[in-house]
Image 1 (cartoon, rainbow, N blue to C red):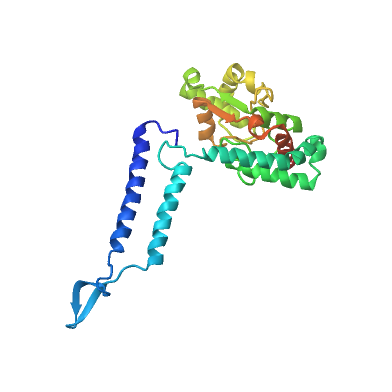
Image 2 (cartoon, rainbow, N blue to C red):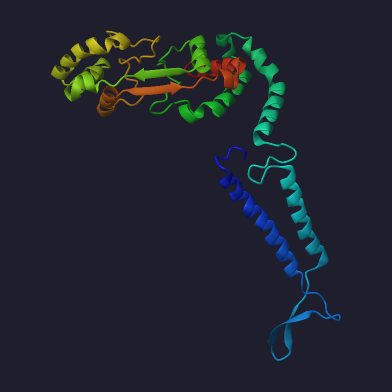
Length: 298
């Protein structure tokens, strides 16, 4: 509530809430106003069948009191807890504070388990079924949004179950990717190559994985590739782990392997980012998560 950009939004909440309390109080008083007069309820003036009258009988006292109790409870709640715009409440409760308290309690309970796993070599940890079950839960919570529940990836998000790794598929390399994140940058080459050059390089890139192409276009594209692309992808097109440059010969494509998509990657460039999880998860959890992800491709 304290993050409102202006006091307008604070009052936008306060006024309806307070007005709602006043209205409910007025409504209860009004609805319980059918008090007895001389031992008889007041007639409403509605008459059927000559002498059948509708009487304004008062609400039962216990029912009215329950309404009053709810209003008092709501008022006390809004004094103690945030609910009136920027007012923070006497207890100073916040959802962020509650979250941090729960995280602290969870860390106290589970940290020893993760610390024990962190002492085990990654290759050995892969064979611990209980550890992998815990690692799977970590993956489900923190990785499936991008990589999918089956770790099969999606366009722009790597498949973690195959043998193609942009920054290396060894346990420690995977751990470093999770810990520190990765930032891949493929520059846009259309300004330098032109539309024809993009098409020719695309033909050559497709040919590297053994697919049928226009031979003359691929031959022209090879010269351009050696001049502009080989520095990152290598003269043989097998990529460079140090740069995160993908292998172009295995027919595995991060953004899709159609001619149109490949040409688009060359022309417009690509920029993928893997966020760092070191500060968020901590080294012990990352260690276990890395072991689980390593197991997926084994």
